[in-house]
Image (cartoon, rainbow, N blue to C red; front, side, top):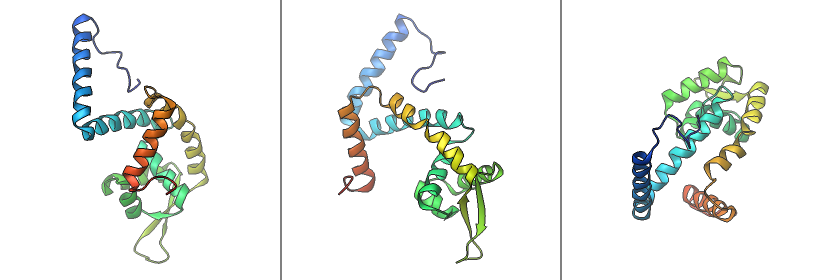
Length: 169
């Protein structure tokens, strides 16, 4: 089921009227409270991305872990947790599942024998490549109401917001 449409939701004139009032309420609220609009948009994006990741038997958190390991190389669970803002107990479950599937391996950290570093396997790279093929469709579905220019502006503004600088600056 798409995060954008719930086929089990009741339809009809009364529900259409309620949906219209809710839409007006959120539009007015977004004008006054961009933080709430950002949260609502984020939830929509996360739900859609979770659905896409699930097609490959992983969670969005696991997909992000695979992406980070592919981009930066082996990392400790703590570093992954801190950078990806994933709760440590959730991180352990994610890594356990990825390891069980053969997508990552834990190795003793050569600098700190008490710690482990998480390494991406070839199976993990293949899974990541397959899952990443879904990303353009997810982005298109999530950002469908925006024009190409608005999408570019949103991307630039979000990058500036999360990094504190504009891309390429």
